[in-house]
Length: 195
Image 1 (cartoon, rainbow, N blue to C red):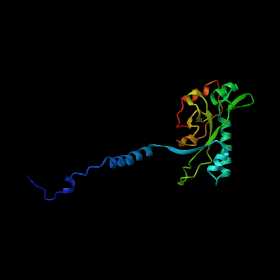
Image 2 (spheres, one colour):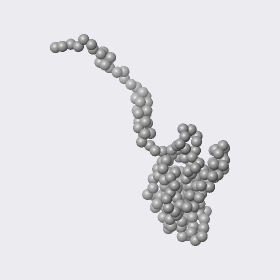
Image 3 (cartoon, one colour):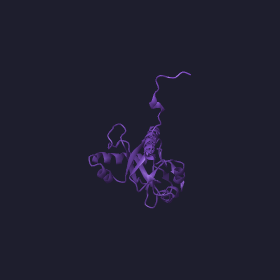
Image 4 (tube, rainbow, N blue to C red):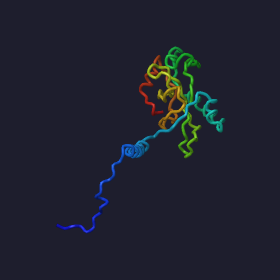
């Protein structure tokens, strides 16, 4: 039998036992990298008023006002419409609707601004693409932020959330006429990671 003259003893030695804490750190680093690479999400901030936005972004006062106006314009173009105030209030709550012409529309309750993905600055927001939001009062989505197409964006008591970067894509089309509880049915078919 032949014997090797060069033996790598380092390869033959037992590796030291890793503690549970060390294994957890390694798995978090490896697992976290895999999760982040498959994720297409961004942080978003929700403001009820222009003043809330200005308090949070004192160097961007005019941009907050412009973002609000753009969100309001988008909301008026895409929000659901109802034939009666009662049907609208069923989905959006008492005093949550207004009448314009012959239809009834939910009021915009807030607007969402995401992080600007074009820059590496952690605190740079994309004021040019705000998302208008209503506040649902439907049984299956009570007190949740909701987009005009029925997509849920989390609890209405929170001002920060994480959403798909596609959430800020403008909706195609315009308002749809719904009946009592019609918006609640739309909501139940949407996920919180869409737009």
